[in-house]
Image (tube, rainbow, N blue to C red; front, side, top):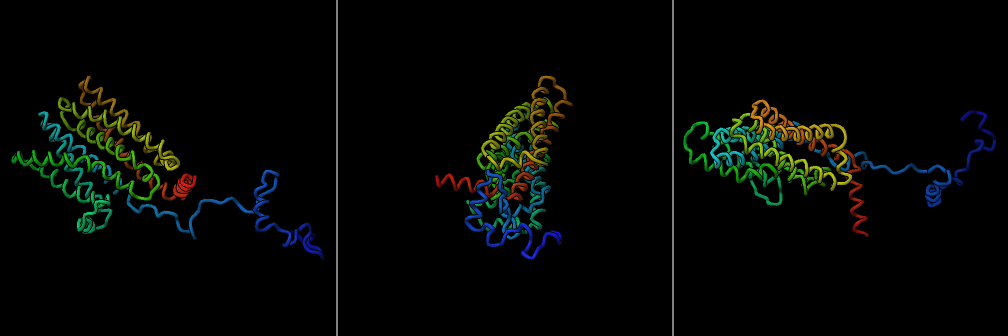
Length: 339
């Protein structure tokens, strides 16, 4: 506004305050946007309340918790592979699977305790058993599973107490599926949109990912002649993982967007390529009988499984940071109930 715009009667071409549209009239004028008039009030945006986020994003350390998810799946599926190898007379495959499951569950627990801050916090979770809490149930499962895998690996290395080792291997195989999938239930039980909305398919995704990682470890380290069960597990796990993940994204609606953007998208695309390629190489290695091909297949499967867990983790964090993924589904469910 310049000095020439100001007159004795006020500001030139300015409307008195009493003529400004307010209240109901302002709302009506805003709705008649099709007549070329500008809205008096900006469109509402999804924002926080007094600068506070709608959800507090997970404070878990990505390397610790995503690594914990990955290693737990590797351990649980390896226990199944170890039991199968023992039943079919494949000692080389069984040895790799037993040592792999023991090492993976040890590192998984170390990552969990590191994120918690001190071991006492994990022990405190064992003071009660709450069936409705995935964290409580998972803590007890880990407490029973870890000693069994360590006992099976110790007897394998020592070459003694075979009966104890066989019993421990069987017990670990019984708990293995729960170890491989309970973390999916743990994530789905949170309010994080991209985890919670996938609660139906996420356990199957994690089961397939666990199978491919265990098969990958066996293909890398076990004798090629004894790796037949690992190759079949790789193929079945890849089909389950990729199929369940695509189904999950289709059924999640808006909450699937974080899987298609940024870092999660890159990780998940890499996971799909590595898992599919690794499974194909694993099947091909059965015909070619080339050790290098089996190792390449195993490395691809191990890396693809890790990329999936990290991609799912980062997608969940991204969905918690954007209030749109929380508010829009809530409004849609409310309108559906009212209808």
